[in-house]
Image (tube, rainbow, N blue to C red; front, side, top):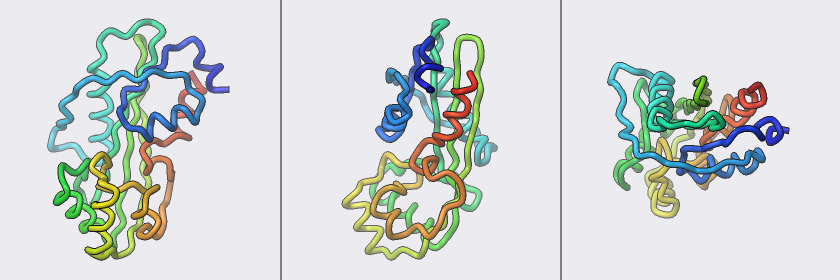
Length: 192
């Protein structure tokens, strides 16, 4: 159904995330992957979805020569905890510190998606609330050592071991926490 809707477009996914790429395959979207180097810095005054909207747009702006048939999809995800954005950890120490800060608390996972062609752009976002139980330093160390979550916002993957043992509940889209709010993306693309 979606494949038929998008047959006249050259869909470009600008993401190196294996999870996002798998979602596109699972949605039966015919797509190519194109990556552009972007310095993911945002103004300090931005909060929550303003950050992810800004970064999704910044990634889209890197593509300056879209053809009439191109449909570019960019996105960005952050974990929002106590009025602060947690991105991807730079190293083991930062991953451990992030997980310690999430322990026993609720946080938000926010993803923004830019859908851009030569003639239009739309940015959508999704927020999911995630509730962690208290996690021990041993559990955190085991997870970081065995799963090395350095490519994940907030230093965790809900679909991995830490999600199985630490997440009490979520409110909103599970797939958003994995990395892409697929239902919302599908709804936008089917309306093109």
